[in-house]
Image (tube, rainbow, N blue to C red; front, side, top):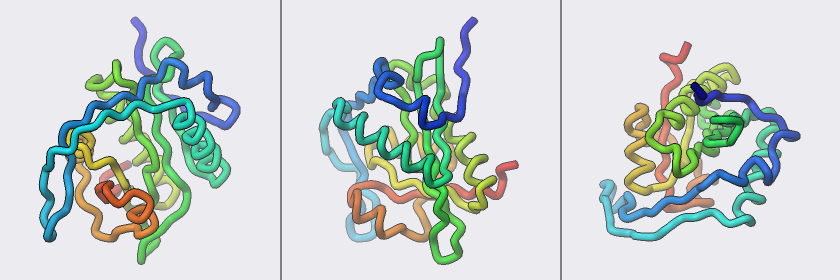
Length: 182
């Protein structure tokens, strides 16, 4: 029986070919927005489906992550990439205790199988080993994305990273305490 396995990736393993069968499709119906200090779920329907340009931009980002000492991990099934995550290696925040989870994605046909949770757990271990006390996530505000992060124990960030907020003003700024990670 074939199983999902996780593997840290280096730059030579990250190229457009690894993403050939990866399907970053998401049909969004509702998104969270902060209004007057409260989070409100609003009807904001759209479909997200990455283009070749999106994958090329992603590859450049993952290369920069590795060059800066961050980690990129792939989840594989039958040697096919079905999920991936990246954690940056630049501590920030007033106490320099945050590291950013810069990406976490599961291919459309493999969602709901626990791959995202496995990747999240591993990135938490990596971030803690790199000196972080908290993982910081500037993540999509879709109802589904927020449900995932809530299910793994994330909460609204105590401190917002203003650079990340400026880059994606509609994202939700979350954190996860790494204290319980062994």
